Length: 194
Image (cartoon, rainbow, N blue to C red; front, side, top):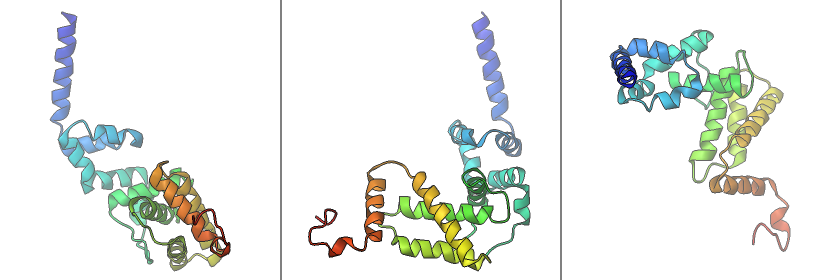
């Protein structure tokens, strides 16, 4: 008899929670750990659509990173993006790079840009072009050449450290290593070129 009562209570709570308006669901979701958001979005189609929409990400951005509302747009080749992209960039800047200043969002966007270029493309641009794009981004945002180089190097290391370990990554890393090895092709019997 207790099992039926517990089951009825869970059903009642489930139905009540399912009838909450979107703005209340958003308030609840943004208070939960980010690591659980992927699971939450799989519970109901309504919840999944909230995570696809701009409203949840704007609320999450304002709650988690209140200073993001004062951020100004920046020049350069890497765009700022919508609220979901900005949230991801700020999250990366804070959690991977442990930054909490005016450059955290730019670093996060640059990290996401490089990671996407390397992971999603079958044939990403040469590393020199990607590195130059990253440096240009920081220089157009007012950083010195030395600071831009240092930030670019940190971003490369973080991206390479966080790539998924699979065949695509192996081939990518092999290609990057060959790009940097200029003496390789002058040797009569290069192991990599065979």
